[in-house]
Figure 1 (tube, helix red, strand yellow):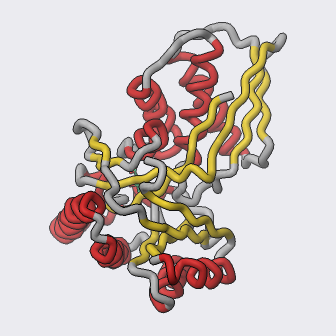
Figure 2 (cartoon, rainbow, N blue to C red):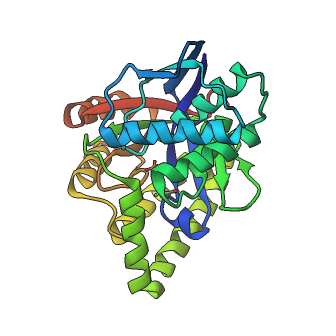
Length: 299
Ligand code: PMV
């Protein structure tokens, strides 16, 4: 059996598509698992319901993986189980790709290193996202906090002081592909303004890396708030995301922001120990789903 975890982007979603740095961390409490067995003919089943377009994407990524690994023999069956919410900014598509690649390659005796796994997963991600930056396949493959710039060597981020992030889901499914394309259109209409926003986001990611490496938790929170403000300005947040961000901040979170593509999906809130339970309970009451994760504890 192969397993791949979920992820969140702490800083730099969208600007990362334009070559700016971003920081992502794994969320190991949610995952996708794939099990392969010999079979007379090819079969694939999931323990969760897929829409027609998700079924289609799954078929396509299996095709991409077999092609990349040069495997013609399709006498196997795959069973897929996942606890990662789909279309909500938690890396479900990358985890699906990485776990399928790991399981199929191991079954056929092809030992891939993480670099090779991430590269194939990037090809699969194109199926879901059109023009992915590559951040999701990297963080999900390496399962470590990463500082990522498109087409540059990957850097890992050392977390000096672990901190707690609460992830709360609006329950609104959104298409990262469509939102990235929409940001592209807005960028073309107003390059100067968007370049300024993306440069500001880049500055935040640079400062955030330092803050994480030196354990300045308050600063991490402030930078999350600034990042959220910019994501609002580029028009990828929405009322429901802003509401959950407000709930977290009004109740003592050190910082909060939307994560991933936006216009739905999740927010993240940074909470100190003495506020953690309260914020978690309040968000649980308002959100469809809530996950608490400690960043830097096991890395
Ligand atoms: O919605 P997610 O979690 O897949 O995150 C997308 C992040 C973007 O920066 C918006 C797109 C990308 O490819 O990096």
